[in-house]
Length: 481
Ligand code: SF4
Ligand code: SF4
Image (cartoon, rainbow, N blue to C red):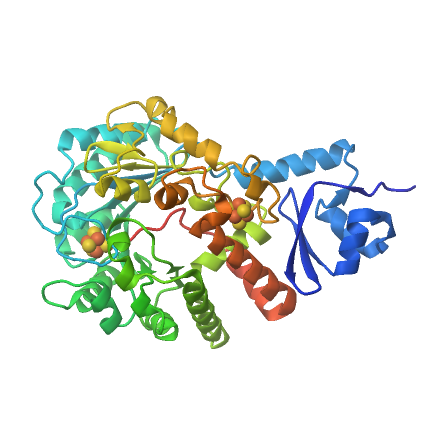
């Protein structure tokens, strides 16, 4: 009996001299030299039997008419999509912009005054009720600011309202508060413990770097956040706090010290994040920004330092790599919102902002804070159907479909990635900017190339990559304050 060896849809990209990656529609990939790539493209039956078997198992070759193969491929694709098709599952509530920090990359009100910068209880109650219109089987409700602990009463109100409603619905709900932790006290911890609330904070690196990036009047933001982390761990448990870093130009010389700081503080992951171009980050661009090369050099050194600690037996992982590796190596997508086609922003994530409007992402509300309100999806209190029927969301979906965007349709990584329409809008004032001209695309392309090269060249890295990819929890969007 002979088996057909048709070419199924796949895309090829050269990642090194003499080394190519072929990625199928299922997201499986194979590394091929130039000669094998030529055979695959012209005469696949002349590839070795072993190679043909590998390429069939990866849906690069196969019998396109066989019903079994079609069903298997369809179920693989459904598994990859399942985390974003169920309805909004991440609901971010920006209760207040009040904050005593003046972080150089932030857009918030630089005042603890609540006037005009805080949700009313009526608006907050409406946001809580809208959350339950989502059909998502599990929900995450995250409180952001400003510093949300300045209005702890609003967090109590919302958590209690949502928990009461959930006694009938009985859905798994995860609460998160993104905070500097400076105001955390016993009463808050007692409430957080009762309602299983997790905390997310910011650590930008060692004290000198953190305090330079995140000034407060006492110049001791780092010391107070670290005290907050220790206090939370004592009261709520060792896994109660996650941390995020933001890279400024001042960070670029210190990747090893930043990773070491995360190890010293006992965190199990570090998300090496570039600066977003929103809010005051844009206004301060000349002082704190850098180019892609500056960031990727920094990233590589930080990743090497994480791998160094892994070799020393410390189980820390880098989150940006883990997200990309989950896409490349895992049949189930962890659902990271910025890499979905069409975009998951507004579909899986909604932001209920202090100004009374709903936005598709944190970045969209930051643009509104700078005066551009065109990415609003609707008012808080509108039904979920109205919000999700917004023309803004329709435009975002059109601009982020990899089958439609010309750069993406032919991109080898289009099973792992998608354009970010809000990044494009922020850069050029239009969502349909060619993805290859956006920072989002340029970084993701670089990251997928880099990880693919490392997997092909280094079996120790490949083993580590497989472990990071299957890490069970990758937060769908990570926020901090
Ligand atoms: S955004 Fe860029 S890297 Fe991502 S799929 Fe499109 S072209 Fe490829
Ligand atoms: S990043 Fe957070 S802590 Fe810093 S100014 Fe903005 S809201 Fe305040």
